Length: 191
Ligand SMILES: Nc1c(NC[C@H](O)[C@H](O)[C@H](O)CO)[nH]c(=O)[nH]c1=O
Ligand SMILES: CC(=O)[C@@H](O)COP(=O)(O)O
Image (cartoon, rainbow, N blue to C red; front, side, top):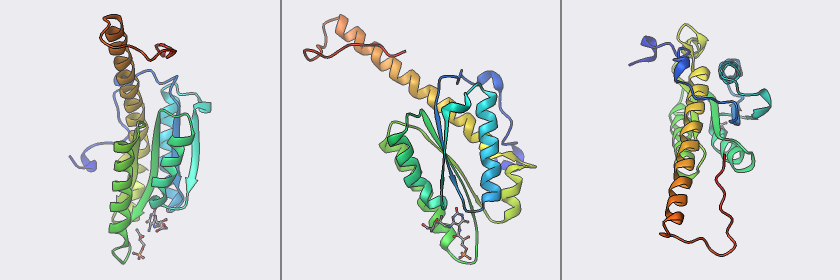
């Protein structure tokens, strides 16, 4: 279904997990900043609307969308976050550069999701015209930043539940004597 048939800002508020304890990193590209600032506003408003404390949100700026890869990697490596939102806007110019930037940032963010344990949300517009970007960053088609923030909350929750499930499995295996901890290994179930 194309974006024109779906408002990017609409979501079922009853389907959103409690996000008050989650921490989020937001990496924002400075290219097309009139658009990326609109995407950021959509994201921050959705996070705050879902009880994420402002002090649980860390923002870094990078020069362009291609740098979202490195910025997101360092964010998740050095900051205590449960998800990262990568915000950018790539608009077709006169050359093939658009294709390489879009493919590069897409593959780079995909790689971060494969190679690390922190979800990185792809909030990068890849548009033919500035008007298309305006329409998707708070215009007639809603705000992709809102969509990305909701995705970030849901993925942080999935990560949390997966971790808890794994710890409970280990506890059961320990109790059944199926596995043993190395001497001195503390057993603690994280909240
Ligand atoms: N043309 C756009 C760019 N280009 C810049 C690259 O993202 C990158 O910063 C540069 O190649 C140096 O590594 N970036 C955007 O985000 N949007 C564009 O439309
Ligand atoms: C996505 C880009 O890098 C592009 O907007 C740059 O414009 P041009 O292809 O005209 O150099």
